[in-house]
Image (cartoon, rainbow, N blue to C red; front, side, top):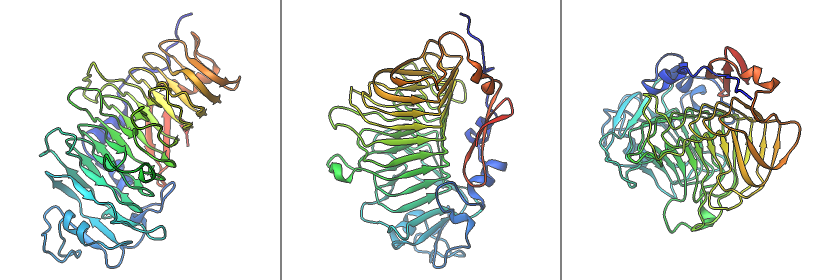
Length: 407
């Protein structure tokens, strides 16, 4: 049967808003007032008393007040558990990794906060770094922190690396980094499994145009290799990364990772950068969910994959029983849903305009509409150009042809 095209492969309107600069509505939403979906928004509250202030032109020995700001690294050295650091807007030119070390923790009752100053855009620019696994941007190895409203770009490896637990990473943008934009993995090679990063919430965040020189490692979001249980990605957007949108890879050397939940999120155009360039070695999946025949029971619900360069959702040799429900995949170059093994449970998923027939080994009932050569009736909701935005509360809104399909 002939394929019925659902999407005109036009440029997405929000690519320009995030790939070049943060201006207009996007900047106002990221850094302005309003509660968020899943976490308290420090920008919505009055300025914290006794907060420390840092600025691009701050002095290391400055008082750290609003009128006499210090540097980012000095503020991190001085902040006390449960305290707040406000970053004034502008570009922070940084050559070395900014590390929040293990032990510099907040508490369950009062996270330590690193936040954009309300209404301003702090950009941590690591352009001075060379591409090297040691050259990360912001490394959060502590626990019970809330990182809010910052942009991290051009790091020599990950833009934001999370090795700690019980953190909230909110309204961040990671872009143009030379490995995965935001990665969760153990802090050091000898970190015991009991201390692998767990129970972190990545919410209302964007990661795009991350690309390494060999074109096969830089994903948008990567909770992989060595993560514990309870990590959640909610209302996140991963687009135009050279490798995968979301990478949940597991390898036999370190064993299974903890189950990850990805919900109400979007992956599109992965495998192709915003400038149209590609690299031959990238996997190009929207959501890559495993590795090396190791079973992990991830949860994927309410997500959308569009125009990714290989598969939309792929088990990638994850032989576990994943819960895959309410997801939509459109226009993948190969399969929209590629599950060649395992015992995953599929409910209420929709597949449209796929490069080849879907494959779903596991428990798939009639609530699903998979691709088998033509579009089913549910595909009418996913015709037209993709667009997306965030609501004031941080929830993700997705439209096709102007008709809203998420939130």
